[in-house]
Length: 489
Image (cartoon, rainbow, N blue to C red; front, side, top):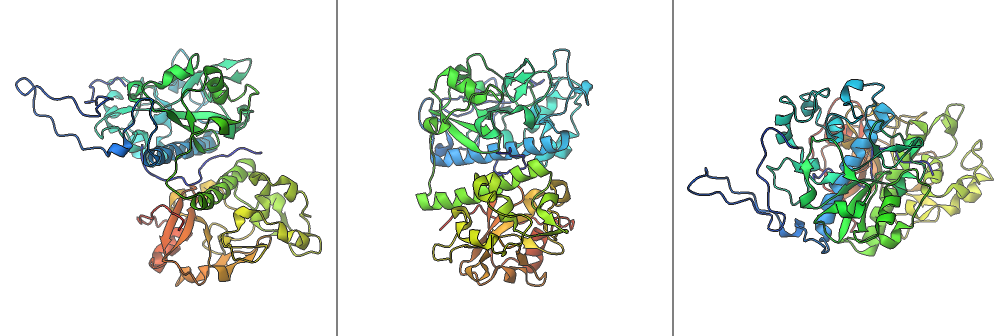
């Protein structure tokens, strides 16, 4: 299955919740008590009281973390994954290469500042990024003070706001026989084509224990020789970001050989990681299934983009400039449904005698109405002028100039708007009343999956102009509206 590219979404629901030795060290916390050191009243100036941290967000070494904490970490990892994939979109590698930017690398083939600094432009942190001198060491007189400006994305939920240390780290590997031992080998960065084990089978970023936190601008990574020992005083489960942008929580106590296989992108070893995964959820099985279906569609869209450098449809999906089949059909190979996809005659209309016979084989993840008719779906995009899908070829990520987190990718429309899932038809909007396009919605909000893969709940009573701006990908109007994360009823 083609690999996911980025922008991540999201991947699935890529939520924008955030998770050195410099010239000066910021005050840190005791990993056991999570409290700032107490100042000596006689010899030290008064220290500002640290903001209390929700006990649910604090880990205890070797014990299970709460579902709430894992969801918070997951959101940070999703954001990091999206940024890394966006960097890959720009550079064709996850990070700038020494061939293009030799000045970014030191004599040992290591970046002079951390990979985290290099993905700042893809975290809406371009202003901070431009303050760094990338051709100087991370602790140079110029760069060292910037460590105090660590974005919340790199902050664990139980890390104090004044800290400049991060627990989101990568394993630093090397190149052996033209194969990387990790996604972040010293020397040359990795491209998607180097991850031959599959991005969904390869660990990209992990969260370690408080004792393994490092200044976020400092280059380097964890030692691959004994990966299990590198997690420090972590919880029983290790949250990880996989190469496809998905997140997992693996049992910490799996052996080093298994961890090495999970981390290696090109070792020809693919494990059944479901046997070593820890599940965290506050949702019912039904709610989890709904979210999982939405995430799978979002991830499939990014995988499609990785392959064709645009969202569907690509040139191959058009006949005389028009689609015969819906984008939902062309996502099938990226949803583990290639066998079904191969049954379609792509050069015939969706309702040809051959293709119409496949209508009843709609995958379950396109069905969000248990009482809905067989073969019809409410999973739809907005189409037409001033939408991401104006007709003809699908958009590219670089066409979404308002920002992927500010632009709606697809929605779940009302039942009265359901259409045959293979039909190349979506929602046409009226800018004066865009919500009308979604049909007779019975709930106060509708599901909106953004172009970054995050799954949001959009109020039905959003002002028409606000919703129009959220649909338009390049109108220059970036709306500051806080759409909450979607939680199925």
